[in-house]
Image (cartoon, rainbow, N blue to C red; front, side):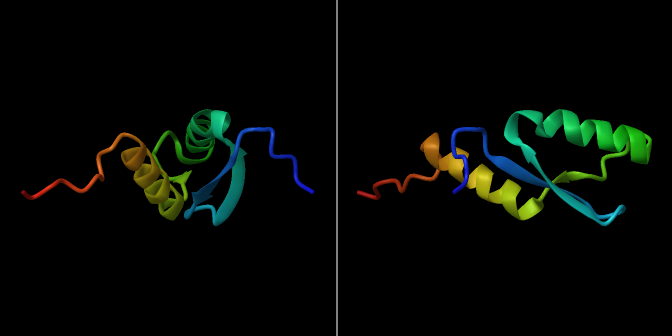
Amino acid sequence: MSDDTGPPAIPVVCPECGTRTSVPFPDVEATVERHNEERHGGETVAAVDPDVFDRLADYVAADLGLLDERDEG
């Protein structure tokens, strides 16, 4: 069984390096920034997996009520 008490792991990809890793949610920003600084001279190359990022954005928008259907009457 997995331990579900910790923060979720977020997939991070770097198409230039051909790498993919999972990083605990609180560490994503620092991990991506460090990779891009060390491997790509600060250029934004590595990032949260775009498909996962889109899904997360949808969840946040739904949670904020931004995707609610409006009454047309």
